[in-house]
Image 1 (cartoon, rainbow, N blue to C red):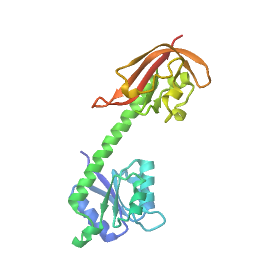
Image 2: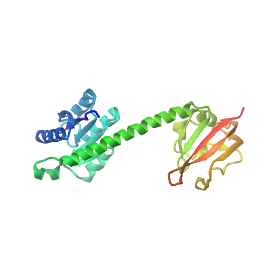
Image 3: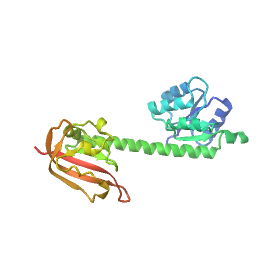
Image 4: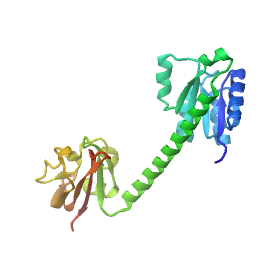
Length: 252
């Protein structure tokens, strides 16, 4: 495996040096140590960091929380916060940036160290593992959406509350709803079938797929199309229904 490249953002020089030494002893490559949020953003872009260790309270007009938000949104690089402060307000604000973890420096100053090397190592490894899994899931989601948008049938997926979570372009065309507007709406308001208004009343009681046979679909503009298809429950590993997939096609 390639050596993990880490950027350290810390405005206390001695603390930054301790962190750098500890990281290098653990086999990580420290790309650089910087002391401001703006420098951190620039370095992540220039050096292609795999991970950032970010002190929350930094000098200058951009603190670590603001810098972490930019780094996450622009580069998708995971950030672990280093902080000597445990006040709830700071932690809650930091959580909004969806950090990969927190390491508190203050307790370790008694030992003249800003962190325990084992704890730092474990936090980094867990963070990198989660980041790889999240990237794979995002890649799989992009692949799945591309496939669903390329098939000739209309597809609508919901959660267990019958709220729309996905529509492909064919479903948009037949229902008259665009996905952005339909997301979060009850599928009964999007997928309207003449004479089958109770089809989605209680999805938890569904046993297998339900057929759609020559039913009349009413689109958002009140136009009508004859369709065939199926309504299939999405089951988790315990057999519990977590949502629905509706697949249908227009009958010419």
